[in-house]
Amino acid sequence: MTNGSPTSVMNIFWQHVAALLLPDTYPLKVRRICVRPTHMAMVFLTEHHAWKLRRPLQQGAMDFRLRTSRLSDTLSEYELDDHFAPGVCLGLSFLQPDASSASGWTLKQMGLQSFVNRAETSESGEPVLCMHRLPASGMLNQRILSGSFKPSEGQRCVAMLARRLADRRACDITPQWLIDREISQSVANLSSLGRLSGERSSPLLIELEQRLRSSLAHHRTQIAQRARGGQVKDGHGDLRPEHVCVAGAWATRHGPAFIDALEFSQELRIRDTLSEIAGLAVECEFLGSASAHQQLRQAWRGIDPLASDGLWHHYAGQHALMRALHAAWHLDSPCTVTQAETWRRKSADWLQQARIQFCGSMSVT
Image (cartoon, rainbow, N blue to C red; front, side):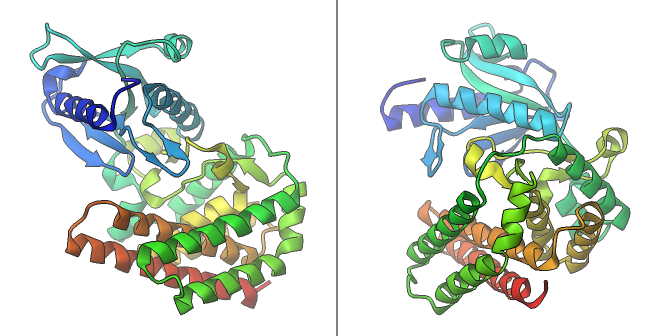
C-alpha cells in the first residue's frame, strides 16, 4: 500500500477497517469490538486490548499517505509510549490477507526487533499497534467528569510525570530559537483560526495576539533561564486528561501512565516541562474542574520551585490557543450543521480560556 491514487488508497483503508471489525481477524479470542475514531487513526477496542490503525491522510506535519510513513510513525509511537507508559504498548502487528481465516484477514504479531529491521522494505501488510486497554474509569478525564478525582491522584500524577520528563533528553536549543518559535507558532494558529472561522479580523483574535506578544515579552528572561537550565525537553507533547491513567488496577500496580505522545513531530514535542503540566492542568479546568487545575499546579510547585505562576498561565494560554485550533480543524472536514456548530462553540470556549490565562500571566509574577 505504498502507491496508488488517493481513492484506491482510501478504498484499501476501508477494507482494513472492515477486517478489524471481524473477530476472526485477531490473534486472540475476541467477542466484542468497539471502534473509536480519531482525527488521524481508528482505534479498535476488544475486551482487553486496543488496536490502532492509522488513516492514510495528510494534515500539517502529519503525513501518513505512504505505508512507509505509517510504519515509521507506528514505531515512533511505540518508543514514546514505552517511555511514558512502560508496558502499555504490547507490540506491532501486520494486517494481512489470509484465505484460511473466516474474515479473509489476519493480524500477524511480530517482535519489535523484527519489525525494526524490516520497517523500510517489508510488504507484509498494514502496521497496527497493539496496546493494553486501560480502564476508561481510571482515565483523568473520567475521574474529573464523575467527580471522583482525588488530590492524591494529582500528586502521584505530577510526581510520575516529573520522573518521566526528567529522563528525557534536554534539547540543545537557544532561548531565542524557543521564543521565536513560540511567537511564530501561536501567530500561525491565530491566522488559521481566523481562516477556519471566517473571522480573520475578529476583535478577540486581535486581542489574543497582542496579549500573547506582551506575555512573551514579560516572561522572556525566565523562559531563557529555563532553556539554559535544561528545562526544555523532547517530551510528551500532547498531554490531555484522556491520555492520562491515574486510577484502577494498572495505575495501582505500575503508577500513572501517559499514553498517545505526539510521535509525528519532534519539533512540536520540544517544550518547557512547565508547558507540559500547565497544558494538562488547563485541560482539567476546561472539563469543569478548576480545583484539579489548582491541585496540579500546587503539586508541580513543590517539584519545580523556579516555575512562576505567571509563566504557568502563559503556557496554559498557549495550550488553550492550540486546542481552539484543533477544534476548528473539524470545520475543514465533512460534518453536519449541528456538528459544525458544536466545533465552533468548542473552539470559541477554548479561545475564552486562552484569554483568561493570558490575562493571568500578566497579573502574577
